[in-house]
Image (cartoon, rainbow, N blue to C red; front, side, top):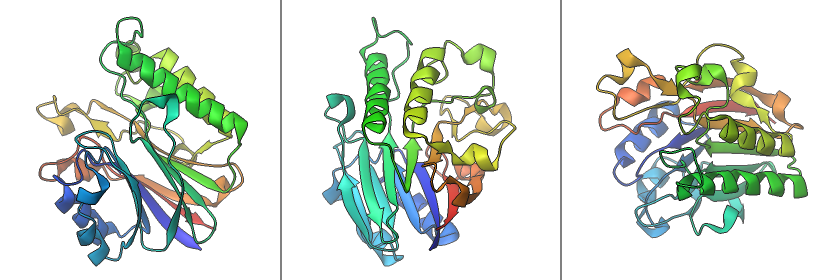
Length: 262
């Protein structure tokens, strides 16, 4: 079974339903994972997605915040929805496809503005969430699995516009990168995007605060596609749809794609 998967922090699925529909029509991934849906499941605009062939959905929603959903052209069975770090947030959903592959969709906490858990509770929550992911992967090493989502960490120097200037900025601080790497290594996860695009600056997020995001190009790679070691070699064709950031009323994130031959 060959299939293409995409992940996208949509920043309100109801507000940006037209953008999701456009992506589904133009790119037609077999599976689309959305984060920051900001809606209860019953109010997500699923009928429009179903009309384009995405009739199979597993999701967790939350009014005004968080929320994750997996849209699929083929049947998908919910297998987990963990509340990592016991935050009470809708930040994870996992579903099993017909070929037995489990897709994990994550929305890791952003972490607030100050990289100090003593003065910023949100930063502590982020570190705790990543640590809980690490512990879960240690306890049960993933097999035949794909993990995607807005993980809110840009781990590599070429995942940010300026490594030196962002070392003390949330999303690229050494403590976050260490927690992120520990979680990745605990599960034996392979960074599919960087497996396919091993070098060069690569971003999936540009701040709304920038008056001209494209000219300034001060981006970060916060959105990731990982595969368990047993299927990582089946991944190919990774790409980041940068142009989507220029669509009307865009999310500050863009979709990240990968294909798998399984």
